[in-house]
Image (cartoon, rainbow, N blue to C red; front, top):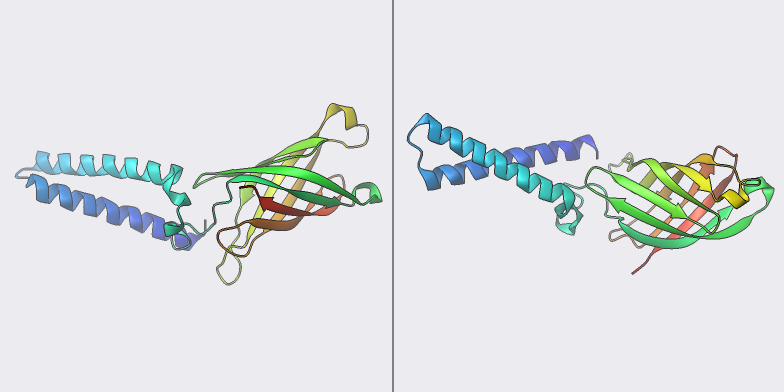
Length: 190
């Protein structure tokens, strides 16, 4: 999330807190300090609950994209192809990718017939015009034990590009510590 969206998120929480507190005050008509303290603590409690619900589920709704949530919801199962140049032998490999997201975290799991990988970091960088059109992630690839003589455990980084919401296609490229590079093409499963 970029700095502007953090500001919007923080200001939205402050505004929501004030709205809740004012509505409580109108309803309760406090007369002393203890009643005001009660209004503040109840408002904070309700704000925490609303924030937790937002972070877990509500951020996914298009209503919040892109003014509050700058990145799209990519959560789901994707299928496609890797075109690789590993060991100077071009290959096309079918794959399945599962992306899980929350408001604060994105995890990418990739599976082929011979290996699987999981991201250890993923982020959505902001372009110079303030838009987010890429997902970058780094991963550890763990080949099946039967193919490790020709495909070693390795680290890699991938960039997946998208251009509109809702996102149904991801294309990009990857590069690894075993000196292989390639392209990735994914389509979202229904």
